[in-house]
Image (cartoon, rainbow, N blue to C red):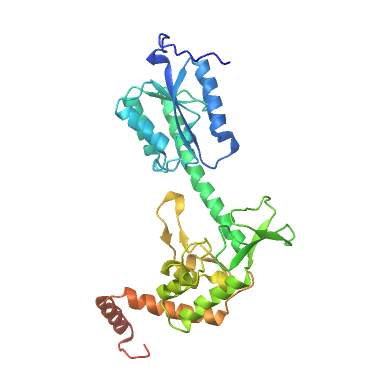
Length: 349
């Protein structure tokens, strides 16, 4: 029989001067930055300094590019600003765990908030004492710049790697569209098997390509293109008809005009790989890129839609979108621009 738990309220708490909080963060960096390894290094540092860790703030799986989405750091700053922080220092593994802010002043700003409240930041694994000396200030800012630049360089390397994969004709990543499947290839390019939803390749030497999916799904894809291009049905009408027949999209959900629209402009159905249509660099807002920035590999794999039918669907899609998006004034502006350019207007213009 276990002894009853005894709560000793008479035990003294460590004085505030010996109390510390720890902040740990892990994104997708190397294993040395796991939350457990950070905590172990911080605990050793605290033992050497005779500090008692009384609070933990953590951001598992969070990027250090900005404070948005980092609930742990936000809570830490909020506790400091509201006077709820019952500790006089914060222990962080190193400057990169505090953040890889692209504006180094932002990193300094959050540290300043703590400093202003009398709470000191310790970077446990960095080779300098954060004591406001000239040397520490210079080193700290150099490390902040290096942390920011690391993210920039990593982003460039990842993008270049993705572009290279596409130019070789391999699937860059993500789930396959409806009617297609991801085929795993070995180092020699031989098929190893179809990957199910959520499965990934295990070896760097392996590659992934797209292959036609079940015949029933291929038939539905071609039906969508014919309904839109030949029968002049709207995307909403097509979605309603598919849902009425109990046909679900690639995620097992109802079709919408948006999913139909994405299907109609997906060049994977004619065997083409197109990458970088849209991009989101360094956590910024996603933007659409002009065609000259797209990375293409035509005829990368077997098509399931005839190129002529696909082209016909694109012509109608542009007509529908232009007619829907342009106001009368926009049409007049375009006609005026065309007149200024050619000096006349005609039906053939």
